[in-house]
Image (cartoon, rainbow, N blue to C red; front, side):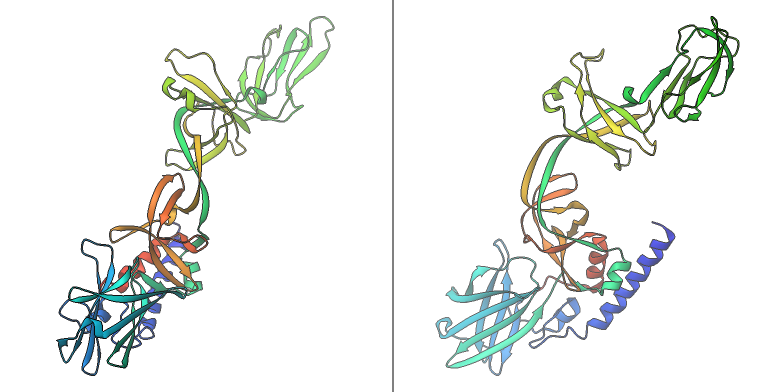
Length: 417
């Protein structure tokens, strides 16, 4: 990270911290002791089943999310003056309002000594809870916040921290095979220079490694027949990669210079026999550096029909090399696409973060970011298939998501109900 980016990141974290301190009072519970983090949860009254105790006069409801050995679901225990009331005398409803104004409603029915909700509570357990209990002709209502994995960051601070987002949607997962090989000159971008007429080499203007332009004189030669001097010129622009011309020698019909244009090269890759059927002409490939960074891309253009001495078969691809970073003779590795599958929903793997026992991304709604626990399928390259936990079309964090994670951890947001 550059000094400038490091300073911007430190500033962003400091600003997030200040913003978090300033916003905690604004997120005070609406009623019944709501919370956003562990400190707020500690102030909420608890019942004997370790659930949140909602009180209205002498009537109370203890509400808890039970998730031991089963998918999370609401359980409730109504009491009056500290004593259990007949469950059939209580009509209980719970409405959850999630980030983005998504709403879920639950009704309850007696089961054993408690009321059980008619559906599960999916992760994250982050929402505003509205509870209505009808008992003996009277409605008791409570509203409180139960938030986790959520933080708010102002846009300028998010920009300074380098936070980037994208829209979740379909993607193509590419199955790749890693092959190893080397860079070679592209024969179509290489020329050999000979004398037009046999003669005596009078001068040599260019040496091995020199860069030349098309039409530039490489050497002058005196014809043996006419005794006239003529120039041997560069047929293309490029670099002198071979020279076999010296003053005073006869040119004869031999090769005097080789000019190579390095703006395009061959990648020659070795295919083991077991993988031969998987690699096809036209398959896309990416040439990568030792650290995994993509140096160039192209397509397989030809595959040899004769195996080499080590029984591997050579596949070749012509690669654009405008900056000359791929040097002939250098060993490389390449990821070759050998199959692909389109999926309806995927996220960029750069946005994935660990959160409790889950792999998550952070959804963005306005200035607010909240964790989304993912059920993942296959991961290929930069994409991970999403089977559950995220809706298509939502905006999620793709770059520097660790900043969101760090701010949530700093706030101490809990998983307590």
